[in-house]
Structure formats: C-alpha cells, structure tokens
Length: 124
Image 1 (cartoon, rainbow, N blue to C red):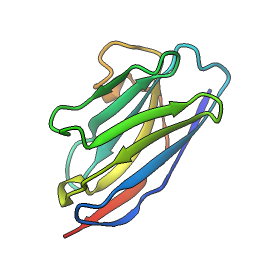
Image 2 (image 1 turned 90 degrees about the vertical axis):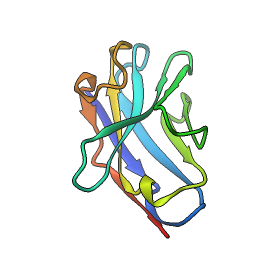
Image 3 (image 1 turned 90 degrees about the horizontal axis):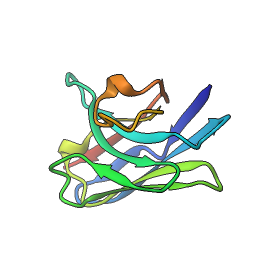
Image 4 (image 1 turned 30 degrees about the horizontal axis):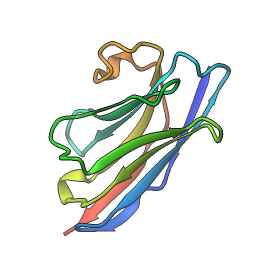
C-alpha cells in the first residue's frame, strides 16, 4: 500500500518558479517509479515527469524545454517537481503517482496510487 500527499501548489506570477513536493509512504520503495502528472481544466491528465526511486533516472514530457526538474530524496521519502519560468499553460492540478512498472511510464493507466493533487495557478 502506498500513500501519497502532494503540497506546494498556489498562485504564481508569470515567469515565476514553484517547487511541488510529494510525501511518499510505502512498505517498499525498491521497484517504484514515481511520477508527476497534471490536469488542466477540461483536459485529460497528462504526464509531466517521472523518476525511478532506486537509481534516480528521470524522464520528462516533450515540450517542457528544460523548465521542470523531478527529483527524489530517498532518506526523507519525498519526490519533488521544481518548475521554472512558468506560463499560464502550466496552470493545472498536479498529481503525484506511483507504479511498479518501468514501461509506459507516461501512461497514467500504469499508475496504481495517486495523491489528491495540488493546484498551481499561473497568473498572466
């Protein structure tokens, strides 16, 4: 059983930065892939970034242009998403998810647990 809790959302100015956090509670972390997805209003949930818990390898959605960085702290059991140079198109609810599959990491159907999400609003 894995429990996830996101935090760090809020209102951000155009071009600003924000760091989201996801607290992870799990009986075993060894095989986990952690990911951030986001869902804008009236849109499908989409993949943003993921990180393999055991070795820190990361994956990103196309089009982020290096603005986002995902990381994990395997001592504090936290996953982070650093977001820079934010635009209104980044406005969404951001979700932390977990899977024990390393294939199709961009597919939300692979993820077995989710947090409740944290809202990020980028004002123009």
